[in-house]
Image (cartoon, rainbow, N blue to C red):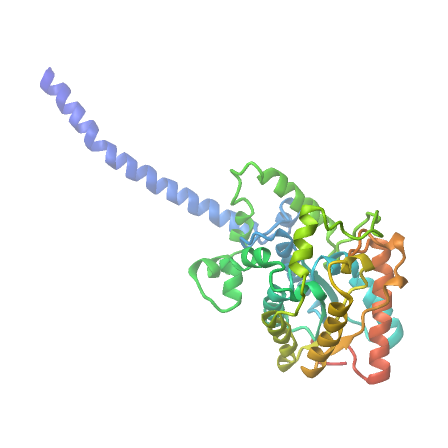
Amino acid sequence: MQEKANSEIELSKNKQPSRFFVSLIWGVLAFIVLAAIFAGFSHTTIIDKVLPLRSVGDYHAQFEIKWFKLEEYVKQNGGVDVILLGNSMVNTGIDPDTLSTRYEELTGQKLRVFNFGVEGLTVAPLSKVANILEAHYHPGTILLVTDIRDYAKDNGIETETQFLDNAWLQQQLGTKTFKGNLIDSSSAIQRLIVFRNWSSSQFIDSFVTSMVRIGKTDTDGYEAETNHGRDIDANPDPNNPQEKAIYEMFANYTMDPSRIRSLQSILELKDQGTSVFVTGFPVYPTYYAYFSKEAQADFSNSITSIVTNSEGTYLPVIDQSLIPFEGRSDNHHLNDKGAQMFSKLLAEQLAAQCKDQGNCLKTSGGQQ
């Protein structure tokens, strides 16, 4: 009896590995089938309604929203003629539909315009973005909105580092990796990556915020701001520890050479057939409290010279007094009312440039 029991135990032990491998094989097959189903589902219009978010694994969720919005915009419109490039001031401050409508009224030229304003990005990472956009979509014109803070050496370093530390982004810039290629080539993977941080305590809040934001962002990339500005007349308090650090950052301001090179790399897109226009934003005067009058004047002269010497087009900054207080959300962002005003003023400035100097916005086909 004892020998029979021992024999059955030994037989059971021998069967256990085979059961494990069978389970493993079935698990792999089930995963493959589910992945195939999800991959097919990810290419349907249903998925866009159920889960509109896609990701390339970058920490900057708003950049990802803009990237996939532009991809869809190009599919729907057959291309993009003008890309508005800049930071959050562009994001909430220029309505492409208003700009293109007013420009067409004045010039007769109809343009497909997309707002690619991304929060927190200075001219350094934007130069990388500009080159990726040109390589993917060949816009006729890039209109870069830049300002004095873009060229301070230490401004935006952490954001830039985090933003560029991404396999997919590096893939677009020429550093090929298996991970970057996998993300780039699979819509299903882009859907799944959205949930990569599902175990984090902050995941739900981040997910909901992104879902709300993608709904607020128009198909042409514009994200309207409805808040009205408060207390924007007073200069930032230099005794406030946070403000003190910013004052110190911009003390003895000079334009950093590496940031100038970033601007020049955008201007060099003319060699690829893309026209580059550069301008500033009509910020409220208190935005410049950190800078001396001399630094502001030097920057204005330098940026004009750099752009024109590189055969780009520099447009003088529109007078900030033309945007009333009720059109602002703070001292450097416009709300939806201010954005409509500025978009029309900018279109009129661009149309005048076209009529008076024959320097018009180019389409993706190269026409002016």
